[in-house]
Length: 265
Image (cartoon, rainbow, N blue to C red; front, side, top):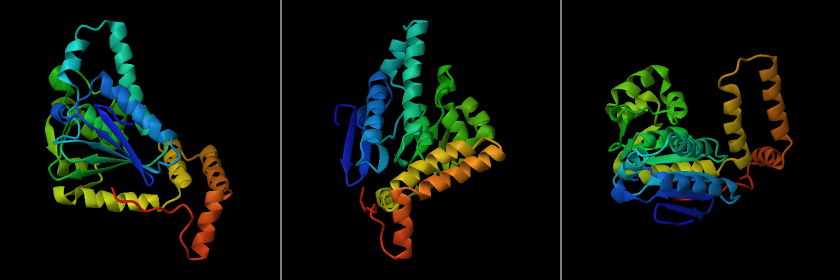
């Protein structure tokens, strides 16, 4: 997949999705939202993709809403506004539920919806030069459709501050809040991603997908009889898969499992 706004490059198990609007700081508009949704779904549906890396071309990761898009929205009817918001909400959900490990490569500014993209990825690695802002309140808006992912990442207490102040914070603060997992020097960003992608490619693809689904199951519900039974059933089921059997055999035979791959970003 390649167009003016998005590139999807697939090679050796890695699907790299690049927002390619550097002059616009990879800001969202309805076209970029549709293209991102298509790219996420294409990656999810491609059996050759084992890991998804989301990146932004140029200085910024994503600066939030595009000014031209906001100008068009000002003239939308209630129904048009709702439909537009639903498309953004669907794009975030598709990313959040993508059945592959997802990594955000945050080299620069991530504002507004850009923060939502970071939060919806499984792993986020930021350059020391990255900056973040939940900027919606400055525009008289709220970070509504990204809120489930951002609140999950940074917690309710931090969200109560940053949703309302709309203040900018740096990569170190993003790390302290839990929005990003690691902060590295700018020149180290891609080599660190190489390492991380290679580590993920060494793992069982079904096991990683099952782990993502398991987290959704156990994150909020109580540890009751149903939960205990559901978790027991899941480990029993995956033990019986070809991947589960191969993993155990490879471990006992002290060899690499058949699925293992290596890849540089």
